[in-house]
Length: 210
Image (cartoon, rainbow, N blue to C red; front, side):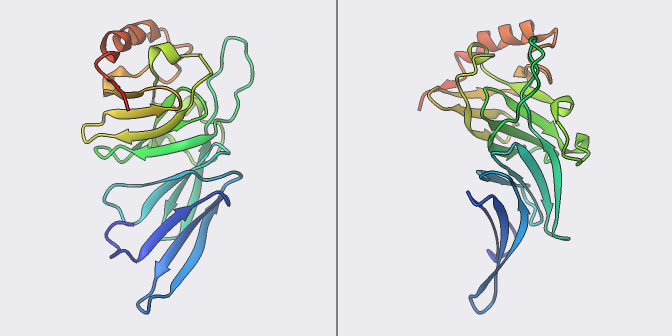
């Protein structure tokens, strides 16, 4: 954790647990479990410049918020798929990536087993761990991947100007500006066509080949 003289280390792993390790003056390390998921915990996100606040996301779709000042764990919500016209019930999204916007620490993005990167505002999360579909602030996805169901996100990163970098398995890497989002409901929003056209016009300049 930042500003802790490298004495506090937070870890996550396939054992489903988030742990805090405290390095003592004599070199010994004591650990404490902060929280637990029902699947592997692939990534943690530390609030930029904060020695206290971090998030976790896991294969169970759960997003948790931790405050080391009181050692509390708050289950924010379960990330689910967007409802399609077939009216099928939403499914859990297995999460691989979480990242915090350095310019606005209340904003964080998630990516996982579908094609959409979702942007959230912590202030809109009540912390009751119910479905999150009505709390998405914005979504990002290349126009040709929408509703393909064949690709998933492997990594996310924010730039210092809040641009969002998205990497896909077996696909390219894409950089999105803030105004390139599809809205909170990309399959139903009336403005999607305009958003898709804007993405299509600019996406050629935003593809990064690895």
